[in-house]
Length: 100
Image (cartoon, rainbow, N blue to C red):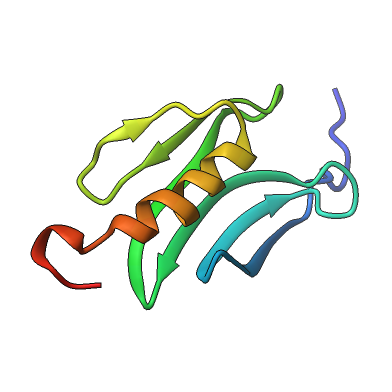
C-alpha cells in the first residue's frame, strides 16, 4: 500500500466582523468554497458574551450556543445563534447589577 506524498487538508481561516455592535471572531473551514463555521465567539465592549459552534459540521446542523455561565442553548442554525448572542444576550448583559 502506498500513501500519497501529501494529504490535502482544507484551509482554515479566522474571520472577524461586527454584528449589532458586537465583535464576532469565527473559525471558518474551506473559506473559498463551503465556508463552514467551526466555532465563533462574541464579545461586546471587550466582555465575553458567548460562543457558538456546529455539533454536526458535515450537515451544518445541531448548533450550540454556550453562555458565560456554562448554560447551553440549541438554536435552529448559525444565523439564529449569532442573532441571539449579539441582539439578546449582549443587550441584557450587566442589567442585573445596574450597569450597561
